[in-house]
Length: 173
Image 1 (cartoon, helix red, strand yellow):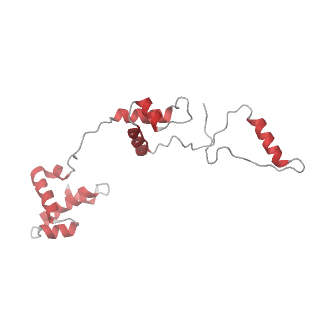
Image 2: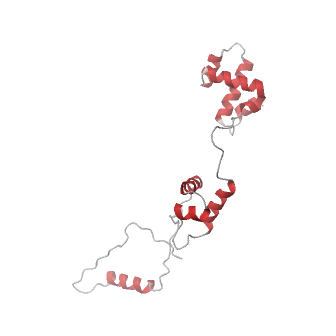
Image 3: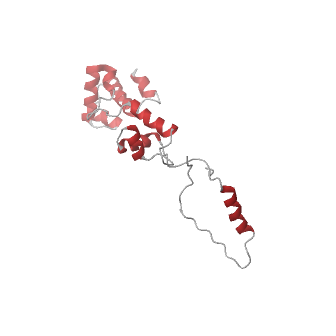
């Protein structure tokens, strides 16, 4: 089993290194902790820890121990709710969700919403496709603007002023 852990490409690197420590210890009993550590790239204290854990708990002892710190306060269903709301709904009276509006809607903190969005690569302020304006007068406005460029009046100067520079066109509900 240890050899399989070392050979498998999907084995986490740390677990494979720990399995190598045990295999080297078994195959070469003459090696010191320092020599084994040099072969696997660890100090002799670390080699000693993993050998002791293997002797006490077997292969399960080579796995990662639970980390210290406070337990998770955000449950999986809370994360799922934020992701679902972000992807399937629109913010009330807004063009897209913000961390503040999502925090109010989900009952979570703004920083928790931000971390969830980061973890899932969600960026609701960006749209990935062209958004057509729902302005009922759009065609008339386009016709007027394009007409000025194609056939400007004699002795006239046509200027274009962007009221909101670098603002992406957003879908409005």
